[in-house]
Length: 140
Ligand code: THU
Image 1: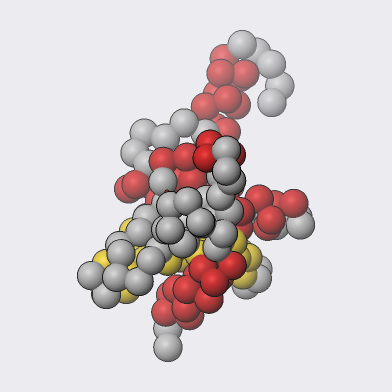
Image 2: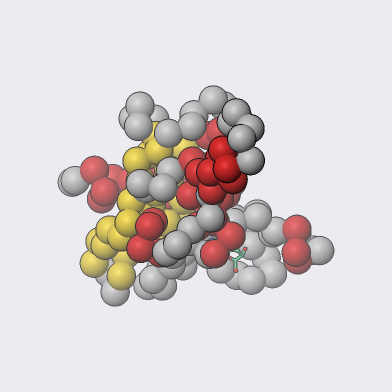
């Protein structure tokens, strides 16, 4: 089994923690830190639907809150047979910490790897804030 296979298997396992009684769309995510640690998450929904949280953000918020700030890859597993990639909000949050991230998922059953940069072209992130601060002559 390759590393991406293993990471995807971790995402499938994490999906078991999904709380998705409203969408019935369980998702699991497994985020690989550059130090080799794997952080997992599942989507957690709420009766006030807009308060629901995606699997990918559950994983990365858990990682960051525990001091991990550098990531190599994230695997995402939606319902069996569904090709599931991070939503727009999750792409943005992942970009904050890992513009070089690889996104791993099953596409028609085939393990697939796509750079986050390809999923979020012309992204806005920390470097834009720093660039604007530098242009104003403020130390960033
Ligand atoms: N969802 C995720 O957790 N990650 C994704 O990449 C796509 C969407 C969740 C949010 C919601 O709980 C359910 O899937 C349906 O949108």
